[in-house]
Length: 364
Image 1 (spheres, rainbow, N blue to C red):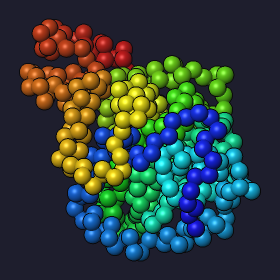
Image 2: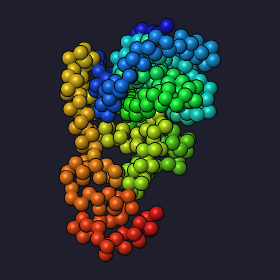
Image 3: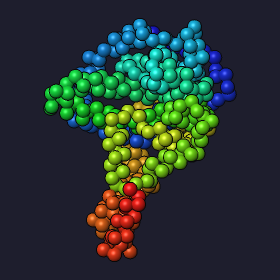
Image 4: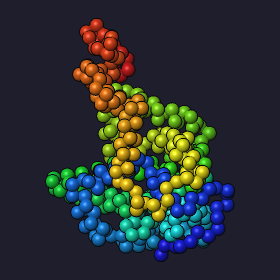
């Protein structure tokens, strides 16, 4: 059963957030992607059907029988972190937590009725106490946001898609929902990263944890600033071909790329929104029922508009040009695909084209 109560306050002096709503740390893209997911044709029908069919009891029995349940006598340091995270985020029911033998560092929060947190042995061995605290806070953030329900459906549908791959139309329908779920879940990870920071309240530990997940336990060989620079280079480099490849590389993943997560979290840690939350000014859970859906849409739309406007990605810059009514779109589109620099006055005449082709060859 799920426990109730928090026990002792955190050992280290950290701020607690009584009654905090998940809206306090939700990434705008998380909210908009979830709204879009719910509007996907047939999703409501599938969701209602799966809610009663998913083998949640089977999942619980599986972890109970083949993993180690965290508690006062098993992995007590993780148990203390779990109760600590629930205390910080004011989550009254402490979820069950299991450690599973796996050589790949990973963690997840699943369950339809009550969330279950699972961490792998590789992750426990990889991270130090403060880095692990951020991960546990990340998973408790998923639980508070209700993400575990959709994560469970994603796991089930992914397995189902493999079993019905030989049925063309059936597989296509399932994969459409799986793709939408993955897109939402990638965004939900950014929200949970923020929850992890609210629990750990140590941005350096959060950064170290993400670096270790990307590069292993070699902190003496890594540098946070250089790691964040990779994210900037990833976003800005290349031409439209690279933008398309980024999308294709991302589609099968459930998590955003690690450097991108680090950059997003660092940006939020320096924002006014984060500081106001730390000062005690944040949305409360008891206000969720009065939240305007229209306002959520506006906030999400404003976020995407700002992302397109400030993005250095070639595709996003092109979208911004189109939205801004930029002239000579045909020339711009060709230049972006070839990596060519625009000609005089934004043109791409023959004189500049030869030079551009040379530049494209050098870049490739």
